[in-house]
Image (cartoon, rainbow, N blue to C red):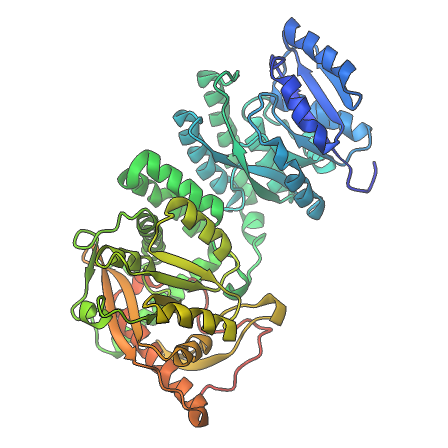
Length: 567
């Protein structure tokens, strides 16, 4: 076998003769050799495929004597491709539902990760049958359980790139599903074997005149039996699956909510509504709670600090302070986030002001303001402020690389949203100038004061002040406070906490403006950070389960330069 990256296409075909000419025509710009596996098709399809084999010199036709199923056809195609010297095979379904134009993106990722399975991550339009959509959601949950991981984002998409050698190695050791159970089982077992999966968003359309071979009774039974096999196969693998996860500091971790997850949440929300979807939260959160070992440990450590601090201040302990409820509250905040995106958070019914908050905000004074927020509570509730003052524009300054994807989904879901995202990798003079223009127009800017900005080109922006928080020194970024002082505008603290069944907006004036004289800059920075940390602790003790920093908040990454400012 060639050691270089040499891709081809494998197409299992059963009675899709009418659609194959168009599929092959769309494949030609890719310039890939095609292996078409005739899976015991009828005479009309056999004749069409024979004609196409004469038309296209880069097509190899393989015939199975009788219908053996998609899985068997794909494996046979991979075997032929391996014998011809190919290293990777793009699986394309013969019904024309896949966006063949996305093949270059799949192959680019496959070349980058040659041992991995690369899969399309479907973006459906309204043509998808609702029964298929619900079935996929159930399979997602089972696959997450069977792999003890959330890495496999979609295991049912038939548009994927197989690493041929690892896949054939797997097929020689175990008997894989041969029909509609194949796609999911081969992905899960490849993951067990040590071959990761990566995903590329791709459009999937169900043609109105499409031919489906899905048998509601037989294939659902096959899929149920497959999940039973995989579940019991997972049990002896639990230790290896758990230890497979590599721990990284939070500042290098990617956000859990990827673009696929946001789109999927919105789709389920539209179909089922929030009340029905919220019922799915309990098993999903339970699975994540079991799998997310580092986050679970951080949650338990946080709650232990809460209990200690409450006792030290002689404050009563709220009921239900446990790790699972902490995770569940985070899941509920994600639902609030979707509601915020969709404009479904309403003052009075869902959101209310805490005493004094409305007066502190000064909604109608026309001044630009800097909202100093945090990962305590759901800052998305600030979107509901637009219902009170429709002309108010609130910009959110975000530091993560996923911000661009987050901004994209925001534009898709709520193009008229009152909150705009400004993605940055570090706070510099250009950021200050941009925000100053917006503040001068009377617009507001929200920034969190409890996360570091990570700039890969600079190795990470680790400029911090250490302030006492929950009884121990914790690193807080200097950037938000330097920015607040440079902007010379009113600075407000804002927290949106889930209290008494509603999101309650707490707001107080922090500074107007924030003083930071050049001669005493470090002392002013330390004083501002200490005040912020004290108020963050005050509100965190009011609603401990609203703390959404699921990592060791009290340390920097091991390689980060350690600040000496720990007085």
